[in-house]
Image (tube, rainbow, N blue to C red; front, side):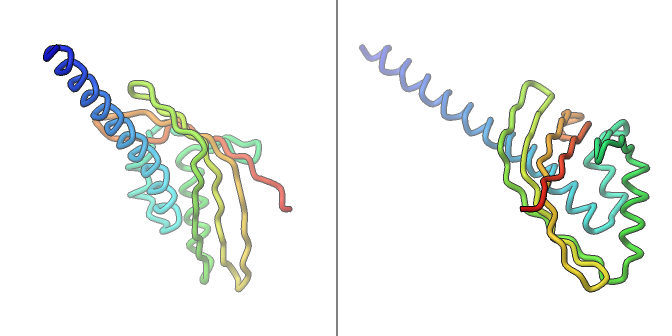
Amino acid sequence: MQRIKLLLVTLFLTSVAYTQTAVKEKQQVQQTIEKMFATLTAADTTALKTFVTPTVRFYEYGQIWTIDTLIQKVIQSKSIRDFKRTNSFEFVSTRISKKTAWVTYYLQSIFTRNGKVEIIKWMETVILIKEKNQWKVEALHSTRLSKN
């Protein structure tokens, strides 16, 4: 009877530890996305490269953007004197299998530029891969949601 109790306690503790690790991993994946957008907002192109793979692709507005395309867009935003962007995320799904993660979320960005405020919403799906213990964005597909 003691062995059965010990086995049950061991299984329970193993299950709890696994669940905590899975939750932590999901948080790391989601934080990678949030940090990538923070570097975009700050126009920090050097830091941006730490959150994406060299072969990253962004599928935006029917176009395929490379990291160079994205950097050009960031540089353009820096030229607007009162440019400001605030991002908020609502994560819908985060799945991880070994060294690959798939994340779907709603993104709302509030832009201020040229004295005007604009709110834009997207639904996005991101594929991340784990390289040297760090999650990096490999692909991002974005669908702009219509204004309601």
